[in-house]
Length: 183
Length: 183
DNA sequence: TAGGAAGTCTCGATCGTCGAGAGATCTCAC
DNA sequence: GTGAGATCTCTCGACGATCGAGACTTCCTA
Image 1 (tube, helix red, strand yellow):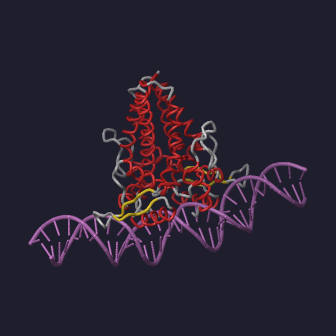
Image 2 (tube, protein in one colour):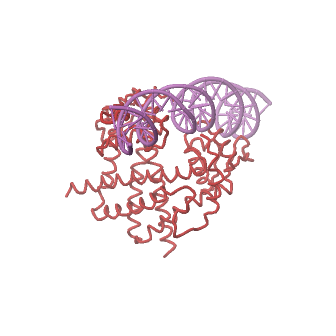
Image 3 (tube, helix red, strand yellow):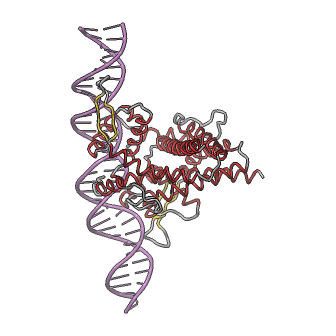
């Protein structure tokens, strides 16, 4: 029945949100264990990801990645450097730039924490057949597409051009409070 | 082949992380549009969820939900009340308690923002059959179970008792830095 | 009815973040 | 080459979210 299908879709949506909450909690636990705040964790992850893709992170790009101003990034790097999680290296090619390198200890701490989760996740997926995993993968791709589109909209815009919908309340609030942000 | 299966599982893990990043971004966009910080958003969501389950939120329980001290919750509620997103009501049964009620404007702003995403998600799930959605649901349940177990471990503990593994680096760091937390 | 427990708030201090701007370096047109 | 403007990072002063300690009110129980 259509109602059941709708209920199932709603239920899956709620599961997606719960998953996000739980994954955030894993990050928070890592942060607490290492005396880091959320921004620090995001920064370390960003630096690690950049290293993996072979394009070393710089201070400026890190600021964009974690959504902080340059002043904030400077303080952030001071903290992480003081803790020994990374060190700054002047870029030889462009001496304005500061290239960020993870320390060995930070790398292994991250691998230990998140690698364990990775192993457990892989183990949990073991019972699923190749076809089933392929379906899950396709599903996740679809969902990421939708959510990603939603996340990257300009403020006040209506999510999907083809369905304007009742956006009055939201847009009104956004206009009204957009300038009062104060922190 | 086993290698392919392992690669598929790794790929699905990465998709789960990407999904989390995108969903976080949706929350951040909502926050920016309404002049809220991350804690504010988490608090509003917690109050809304509590209202939906019929067990009204109180200041104390909100503090546990978002992981802040009572002093911080007081300031948080001052902010949200000043912005008109909720109001405090003394509990008639237990007059020590402060019950939190969402304002109409906050409810509709949230519904507008996240309801749109919900609709798009449901639309994206439309092509999937009941059986396929059931599989996805089962998969998400499994993953949430693993992640949730991981998120709720005591600090310094090894994730799974049955596989002690090479936890030395992580636990050493945790002990070493556990007391230097300074924010 | 007194004593302790529970829930919230106040106060002072700390630290992460911001905006503005300085200093160093790179790029490019001349 | 040289100068002008752009780019990248850092410094400075201010603000605000959070914390720990403790006060105050209200509830529970012996």
